[in-house]
Image (cartoon, rainbow, N blue to C red; front, side, top):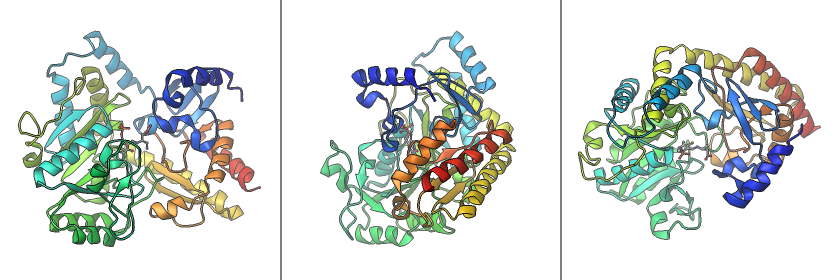
Length: 430
Ligand code: KE4
């Protein structure tokens, strides 16, 4: 496939943007290729600046649950722009989307709109610290909650599991207040509470991990986590930026029947526009300025165009609850097809899927946490990625990301994808 224009643009981009991109994963570094520049997208397809067409499994990293350029969303955005792009004042659409989110996610009495998932998670832990008057938080190795300092922390030394900075610019002081537990290991959480009595404000988790690749919670893990937080008077924060409105109308908390104290949202909530949100019980959220003393603000929070996009998306989802059955069927078809290819040739590859999120891990281990995810062969994944891309299938350019299916993916798309998987795995393993 010819990618001349993408290459030219990437040369220019690297002169004015760090690494030529505005978000690192887009640079294709971990798959050893230059990135593709996309010109337009519609439904399940994307077209790059050289005219190559792809079946898209990134979906803008999650927002495109209904496929690209859904007509309802596009019309709503067009109409909203006629009235102006931003007022910096309260507007009706913010009330409408706030009411709808509280209806769709019962654990949310009050919600604050922000502009990204990172803003949502940063604000949620500030609020949790204020509400509990405690400083520490627990996050899980392999889970990602945006680029807030408190989250760019890697597992520290040994039993203490005190965090250490995972990025230059994050201070030791910040890192000291982030403790690291292991996903699907409730004992690792209990030990942290034991070793840090009455100092932990909250536990934040991706209820289904997407940022180490797709990893589901084991049977009782989320329930156990709920109970441990309650017992220790710490808040449980579900980071549903990726799973919210994707895994079920009410997100992972509906799917698994576990109620968090706070929820962070993003991606689908904006329908492709920059929107994040955090919300929860009224007694907690009432602490947020101006109703309370916890400060958080944003020039473009509740932006009327973004709200029109998100409200239209959520309204569609709310009215078409059967779309989750359709996504489950599509996901099952892809998973079964891939498993058939793997078993026919006994490839050392494992597949994880939850609803419309899935990942092929290039390891023969069952992947249920960061350690097993990390056993994947990154070079083999890179070769697989390259073959899929050249066959017109655009999957996330990292072993540690989830692929997303939309309602726009057709049976034909899935058939073409499974054929490409067979060719790509043949190429990787010979
Ligand atoms: P943003 O600030 O990127 O809107 O959201 C941060 C975030 C928070 N929580 C979860 C569970 C997330 O998955 C994310 C962002 N996800 C990544 C992809 N896995 C965004 C893609 C990117 O960084 O370019």
